[in-house]
Amino acid sequence: GPSYETIYRVTVAPVEGGSALCTFEDVTEQERAGLIRRDFVANVSHELRTPLTSLLGFIETLQGAARNDAAARERFLGIMAREAERMNRLVRDLLSLSRVEAEERVRPTTQVDISAIVRMAVQTLRPVADGRDIRLEVTGVADPVLIPADPDQMLQVFQNLVENALKYGGTGGLVEIDISLDDCKALRAPAVVLAVRDHGDGFDPIHIPRLTERFYRVDNHRSREMGGTGLGLAIVKHIVNRHRGRFRIESAKGKGSTFSVILPRD
Ligand code: ADP
Image 1 (cartoon, rainbow, N blue to C red):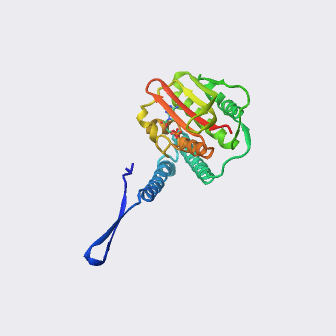
Image 2: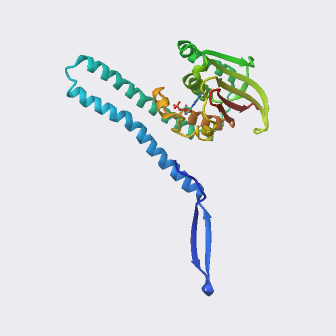
Image 3: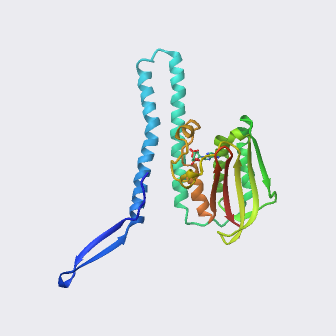
């Protein structure tokens, strides 16, 4: 990706007496925003074009060589359906991301029981866990924990995190979501910590700082195979920001990962 060194705009103006005034303006932020935007558009185009190219290829084959081959037709239609679903997920996540970004400055005010929301996310994903023989457990505080939050967005956060834990950390056989109360120093407020922990393969911590970037993946091939759009953690980060919270990632290769959401309680 692009590297972000300090970028200066330099202006030189003549001054009386034959000397010159030289001003340095730090334009790193503007340049950086522009780079990120251009990068994003290029990424989206690429991500959409890949399934689209495949779809067009299969359509052509179905109109030609495979026209009268029932078995091939069946197989190709299956692949086409998967590619169309991928595009559908991508568009859904892009819309989700842009909605979340647009609302980022509007603080949620409704009091919501975050522990109930975590349980709701778990309930939705229970069948997936069962199907893969993964134990899915909620531990820690069982009482209601009221915080100002957007319930739909919070549900999305925990669905994304648990879905990832099942997708990438499922080999460990156990996914836990721990709820605890804490005084968060960084937030200077009483907080609730919601930690989604898996015991799967984990990854090299070198990836952590970039993991919430759009389309950043540890293993591109694996993510695609699993139907990932590469936008899930970017969406999580924006929602957590909107709630004045913190998002922490820990991982160790071979030991599993923990994704923690820390939210202020006042
Ligand atoms: P994706 O749609 O690819 O899953 P995400 O933004 O949700 O996109 O996640 C980004 C990347 O982070 C994934 O592609 C994967 O490489 C890595 N990742 C996320 N959660 C986990 C996890 N629990 N264990 C290992 N890797 C993970």
